[in-house]
Amino acid sequence: MNNNKRFYNIFWRWHFYAGLFIAPLLITLTLSGIGYLFYTNVENQMYDDLFFGETTINESISIDDAIKNAEDQYHGFNVTKIIVLKEDYNTRFTMTDATGEQKYVFIDNNNQIIGSQNAESTFSNVMRSIHSSLFIGGTVVNYLVELAACWAIFLLISGVYMSLKGKVFKRHKGTLNKRQRHKKLHSITGTIIAVPMIILIFTGLPWSALMGNFIHSVAQSHPSIGIPELQLVPPTSDINEIPWATRKNQTPKSEDPHAHHKRIPITIDKDKMISIQKLMKEVDESQISEPYSIIFPMSEGDVYTVSKGSNTGVTGLDVSPYEEVTSYFDQYSGNFISKVGYEEYGILGKWFTWGIPLHEGHLFGWPNKIINLLVCLAFLAVIFWGFKTWLDRKVKHQISAPPKTPVGKSFVGFIILLITLGIIMPLFGLSLVVIALIELTIYVLKKAKSRNINELL
Image (cartoon, rainbow, N blue to C red):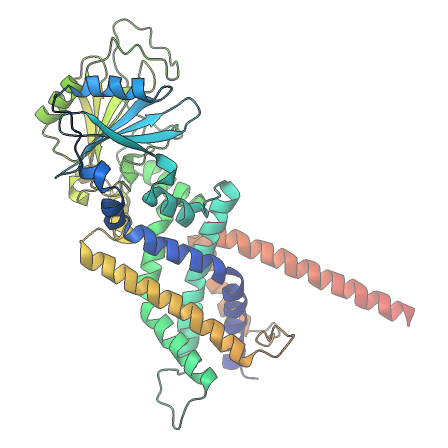
């Protein structure tokens, strides 16, 4: 067997096993991704009465009275965020109880309560939960999802290599049999969507467990390529409405003339705080237009955070990357303190400010959704045709894996590729270490077994 054939077989064997093990997870992630792609369209229909409806009460009240009414009506829950949406959308309160459970409460133009919904059961949050953590959650599951994304990139790269080496684009004489047809469809479609699919995967990795935190660390440690240098603390709450680039920034502190600046979690004297009505006036004077979100302070030293983001995950809230801004207002006086805008991001922050809405399918409207949908459907077809190709050659009661290739010079290029991908995607690299340890253990056990047999003979 020549070196080219050995090299091809190495890719084929790893491509086969990787696809076999992660295909179910990739199907789940792709289907949930398609669901999330159209969450705004679905939610506009599903929650039409909450998003656009009105109550029969004609009396207009202040938004502060609306907050009080909501907290009285939903006992045990406090308003922690206000989302002021654009166009015909109603304003939304996010209400949280002591256990962290959340409700979304909607108010109409008169600031009267229309109704509420459980945050976890909304269509967008269900799709997001499945897509990011298989609806189970936890560190292990998050790592598993990220690992599947990393191996999908290997599948695409190895698939393109085999397609080009296998000359699938070359016209064949005669009629193709069933296996050849499935293989050709699998190879050609996979090659065509390889680049857009890799872009989709990489633009989703900023939200991942390991690589996402690594990207944040790089962005924060190197302000010239990341985001403005601010003192950092780990995130203390799940604030979806804050832009990706400033999500882990430490917010400035409010100056309470009556306080001694102690950090007492979620113990705020609301009588000392500026009213939301006055705060919104300050927001308007700061030329922050709708839509925007107001995140409440969590302690007596915190501030109001008012933000516009291109990747909020909230129907009616996303804006153009150029409009992204995170502003801070004193919770007692309402005075504007500081802001971080898109123009202040480094190249890395700007890249992902564009990349994430591209991944979510709303960067440039309907064409973005259609392109993402077509790529996802083609990817599902690639998985299907790959599975059919395997079944066409599979022998009954056997896995029918590609032949194992002896270690030789042909492995050098393959190992270089794996190391390169392992450096770019650390979790992929860790999985390779695990595979190497398993292979080494199997090799040692086989050697020991062979030695014992020889000794008995």
